[in-house]
Length: 318
Image (tube, rainbow, N blue to C red; front, side, top):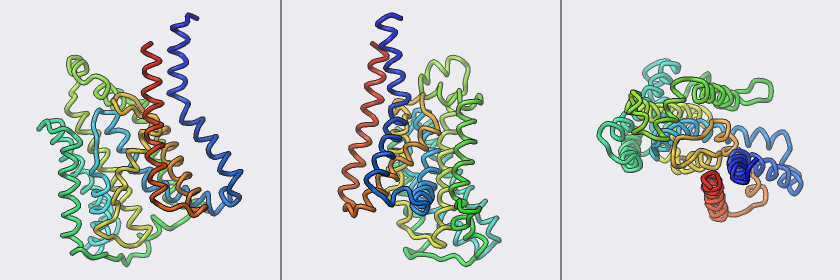
């Protein structure tokens, strides 16, 4: 193998597996220095806490791979959580769930149209919808928490199959499904192609605007799913629900290896990113580390992840 080929191979290997290696090493180190970390109760808590951000991050992965950026998913979670609780006063809870998912789809569609058809830069378009949707949540709730009354609905967020919480099972099913869509279907290939080189994809005859919009629709749908799980778990919703969650979803996606330049990423990698962030947060909580220090470390982790991606790409080009 030539020296150049070796560099390319090393760069690709580094980018592909560095996060997984770091994740495994981190888990081992934390388990050694924190005795309670590997207890069954703590592991289940980490997985349950990962489920909501994990669902949001699935959609965020599609958006970023497709060359977009969506910071409205936290507000979407808040509105759909409030909607699924509030609408149960007027319809059976399964219909309320479907209506909340439809709200998420609609928000994603609006974001996609603004970015792909109108031509607004995605981060600016979703900044606008983030503010609008948060405002709608305040209007819908009157600025106060609303509480649910359906016991069957609460099972979605608090029920268990043996010792495994339903939200964890739901997250695993969604990860497997969307990873299959991304890696094994024409839709996934076109989404990657649009994010990698939109103009070349357009010249190949692919309806790039459709697939660009589709990524935002998927983002809105998974944020709504997270909103339903959130509302079910707490049996309530507040206007501030999901505040800042969009940053955790984006961070998990980037840490999981999705390229911020678009065109490349995986749902499995995003799941690793979600778990890594939650493991670090869990460790700090067990140690009693202040929240502001946790934010600082989270920022360092994000920069490290982006740096690994950039360094690996630079090595491949060399």
